[in-house]
Image (cartoon, one colour):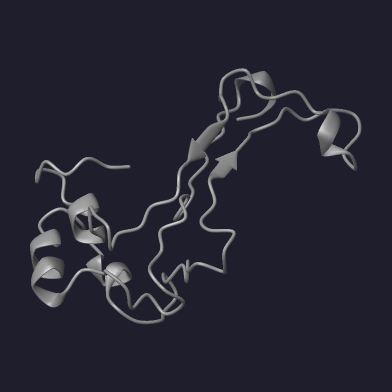
Length: 121
């Protein structure tokens, strides 16, 4: 589609800071949990312990602590070199994702499980 009728789809992998360690070794699903999660997800290997293409490597970097991640979608304008003057897209409000520590709970497996009652942060 072109023009004003065009649809914009945005997909974000790992939008929130989730403290899993630099090699995804902290609080990741164990093999039993991965098997259970495969009932709902096609590619549970992305949640396996260890470094890999899906490992976010989120880890605390000192006393500053964790960070909230915010995404803002802006409209295009006539000044492509300066994004600060672009208006925020009215069909897509800014969205913030607070940090999460799966060692304090809920765990990564609990967050992924669609029917275990654990609240997503």
